[in-house]
Length: 160
Image (tube, rainbow, N blue to C red):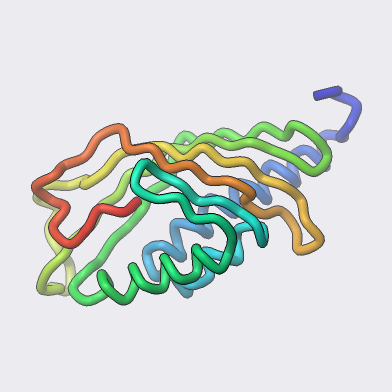
């Protein structure tokens, strides 16, 4: 990208907007914010994919995340932790991102504070493409790749 295309303040604002999307995703996924809010982080025609699924557009995502939330919510407590977040602004309306995720999950009877035996459950990375829309910055494409998984701890599903 031509370094003169964006001044430092605009570049930092774009980077922070994309980092905020990464963090908002984890809060929605863990139910700390409305889980259905995940789809609003994406463009109308956004894509979420992993080796297990490819969701095209907000409508498919809405059904998928609503159904998975209903099926898994009972007896589940999770925390996605994003780290090593790197965002590169590639144009005035485009950016890419790479972040690691660590998933801690408890499935079963919900004690007030579940222990961490057998944790974390999954370690992986998200590869993102962001675009600026009239709604602000949104995720145009998110790819989840699992690097490590603790299969014994996945009772009840292991969706990142």
